[in-house]
Length: 174
Image 1 (tube, rainbow, N blue to C red):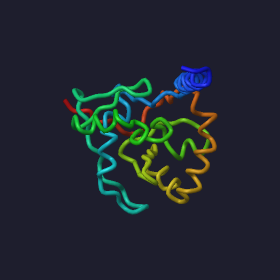
Image 2 (image 1 turned 90 degrees about the vertical axis):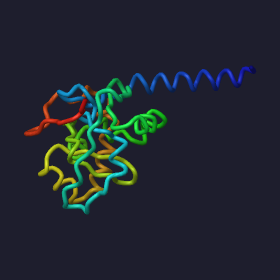
Image 3 (image 1 turned 135 degrees about the vertical axis):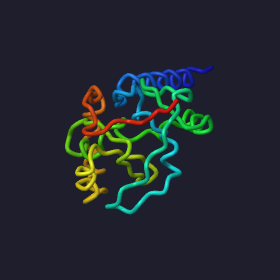
Image 4 (image 1 turned 120 degrees about the vertical axis):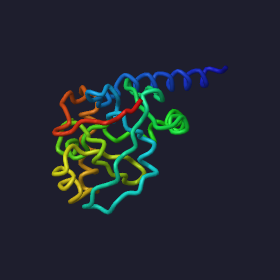
């Protein structure tokens, strides 16, 4: 291997380690699972209602079908969904490590409720309460822009350790 190839390989390795070190923590609630034990792949096949209407209930994962990502355990409803996830986790994980999208737009990390979801531009977003969903949906593009701007400074901070208000997870099953 020539010197240029070694330099490129070393830089790529250093970059991948740096990204792993600086990645923030996934939000995990009392279930001990990311996204409260719901199947993140299944969201992408669910019907999505219009803005202002409640979305379909998410699909419960199974405790016996899991994968690890970003220091957290994700549960899936099928082995096929788990395999899709492990092939490309970034495609399926909720934005902002499962924290509330509107909370990130406002500059903080608060829990994301997996039943208050929306997919925008093939990305999964969660919010904390139905009231917050209303605020977020007043200007989704503007709030995503704010969240995107705020996330680099929030990402390295610890995950929220708060409980999702007035809600508990039925997932994962099994």
